[in-house]
Length: 295
Image (cartoon, rainbow, N blue to C red; front, side, top):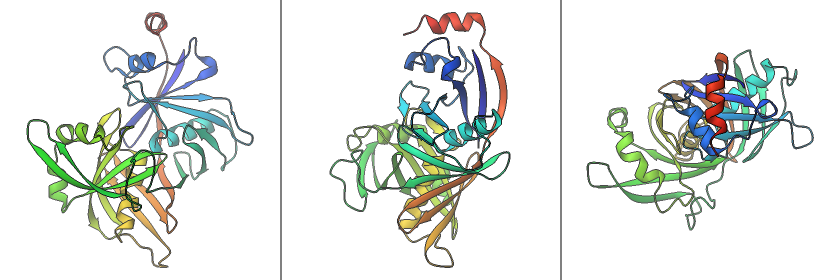
């Protein structure tokens, strides 16, 4: 079984081609592959398959390290996109792939960078039943080792659910203990499908610092959809407006680097960033036997 490890701003995925797998990629097998002690280790697995829709290059499936399936990953999608180009699935600079969240359309800008049309963000979704039309709300969640804390949040659906939380300063943002506060928000009763969580603060107009607690992953160095959710929330609050007044371009500074998110007045989102391969490998017979024994 051949696979490649890729990373984008420190968010790393294993990429496999479905037609070259000796068995179906199940939740249990994804958990084993993502385990850093028992497998190669990664933030998730990207499975690429032949296209299922006319005019598309491939179908992308995304599995988290806990075995759950993600609708979309901005970083994972860019890694898959650049893999498809490097491995000869397409020679076009603009093309489409399908995900559980629907079709996404990248534009390849260089050997390492692409811009991804992420579609239109929504402030109302089944991921926040009974939510306000503007997606804003408050919740109370327990802090591990402490008491309950109230949070004002902005719900954004951008392929997957995002809970974006603005904080008052960069110092406050950096002081947050995400492993202690993230789990209760991710699994809060208001979010029946769980949610990704981002906390952000403004560095300067049009530039924010964000930290991410990803659904099914935990605290991560970066997240493309998390950055998009934070950028949409920031834009809705009036930040990052372009000179023409018709949209917002927000640079999101994450632990792993920077992403650029363009947010249109209609909440249409384009995400620009890089992704690079780390290594190419073959699974050993021992690992394959272990994987085959899993459901």
